[in-house]
Structure formats: C-alpha cells, structure tokens
Image (cartoon, rainbow, N blue to C red):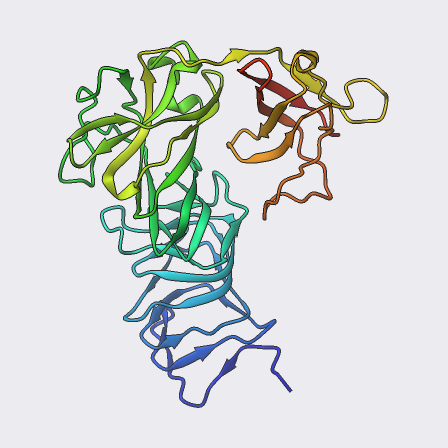
Length: 383
C-alpha cells in the first residue's frame, strides 16, 4: 500500500545542526499526499526529488536553502515572516503558493532561481509574497513571472513563439542609469529619435532565446507622469546589447491612465536586450478613448452587462478586457454586450465558475469595419 506520509528511505542521512539547519546527505522523497514542513534552514547535499507531496516553509525566522544539489518539489508553499533565501536553485514541478513572505535570490546571479518546470505555475503572488530576484522557467511557452522588489509585486507576462528551453526574469526598482548589479549602465539619454523619454524608476531583466512578446504594468510608483501626460505615448523599450542604446519595442496595446495601466511589446529576442522598461514615444499612438463604464451584474436590469453603444458602428469587432495587473480576463470576437463580470479565458488563477473580483478593469476593442481601435475603463461591482 502506498504510504500517505513522506518516506525516509533506509539510506537517508539527515542531521540537525544545533537546530539551525536540516541537512540531507542521502535520498529524501515525499509521496502522494505527503507533507513536510520546514521551520529551519535546509542544506541539501543529497537527492531530494521525484516528489509528489507538499513542502512548506513556515515560521518567524529567516530560512535559507543551500547545498550541493538542487531540490525539486512538486508543490510548495511559503508562509514566513522573514522570507526564504535561495542560495541555490529550487525546482518546482507543479505549483508554488505564495501566502506571506518573499523568496529571495541573488540579483547579481541569474544562475540561482526559483525554477518552474514544464507545466508548473504559481498562485497567490502579491505584494507580501513573491520573488525578489530571479524566476526561471523550463519547457514553457507562456508564463507570468511572479517577480518584484521588497515592497511590490511587478510581474512580467511572457508569450513566446516556441517553447522556451530556459527563460529568466528579475525586477529592479532602481535607475537604469546607475544599476547596482550590472557592470555597465543603461543610459536613458542613449535613445532613438522616436523615443522622447525613458523611465529612471524601474526596469526588468529578461533572458530567453525564443521570439517573444512581453506585457508589463505600471502603477503610481512607476511615475509615468514624469514621462508623458498622454498615455497613448507609453511604449516598452529595451536596451540593445548590440547597439548600446535603447530601442523602441512598441507593440499593439497600451492602455490605462497615468496611475495604472499596461503595455504590450512587439516580438523580440530577449537575449538581445539587457533591460526592459517604459518609455514615451515621440509620436502619438492611434488609440481613441471611449467612455468609462460601470458593470454591476446583480440582476436588477441596470448595468448588468458591459454595453458600448459605439460598437453598433462596427459589428465586426474584437473585445479584450484586462485586470489591473494586465492579465486578460475576457475576450470576444464580434462582441455584443456579453460581458457580465465572468471570465471566459483559460487562466490557472481565474476560475470561470466564480465572478471576477470588484475593481477597475481595462478594455480595448478593435472596430474592424471602420479601422479604429478604442480603449477605456470599466468598474466592476460584483458584490
């Protein structure tokens, strides 16, 4: 009969060093439905893979993971007050659940990461639970990197043409002119004529060899108003390693206001760029604003659905709705007032059976009959 708790094989050697670390020098495995909780450091000098259960990190003290070999956990959760420090890579086979406490990796070493294998994913990432440093993926085509700094979650959404053998990402809340962990600087004055200004607040580092698009969101801390007072001018820019200057990565979508919004890039090879951030285009984007809308699907017959009268001019249209982090929650070709607060897209975090949480959402719609694109806000009151 298969054991329900973790099994320590006969050749395991575990040592607790003055209650400061648990050291694995043998072969440790957690079977299906098994659970193991760490309240102390893990030094992994033996095999700790082929797991099917849950590994949790808990407590008020800082916890570190180190050792000669990389552990591989099926499911992991982090419930710590002072976080978990990775001194070597930790592989995730299925899911990571961030509850409280950050996972930190060395920002100067992209070789040490929280690494998501094949179909692995994360849940629960927030300002109080995320990765400070590098996240990597192996064997995936699309992924949301749960990265940020000490204060905020600042995710990067990656969509690649092909499956990535390896891709890595980290977020830096610092001026690219004076980066703390790079040997070179990324001068914001070295820019093409079609870019008027580049952010000195933050940037992302993305590695990968596959042609990809990225989606980044901004918030009040991003200080977008210092770049431009016209949101339609916001674009993504990348520091070209070949040219030693910023390039315009402008893509098909930018939406939001000066306090929050997101932008999508055109396809590019991440390895060709050392940093990615926001810039202001010297030429206005061809987007027009529609009105803001209230959607309150409570069955009273008032604002139960998102109704945009202008779409009567263009029955051939394409509607997309995004949450404040830039994740797509709804999409419909030839939209005709179907959105009522429920998602219709496949998303591991969003359940189609439950209504979306109340809050501000962005919509963008292409009106193909009249060759125009429109964008705007909606407030969802789903209580």
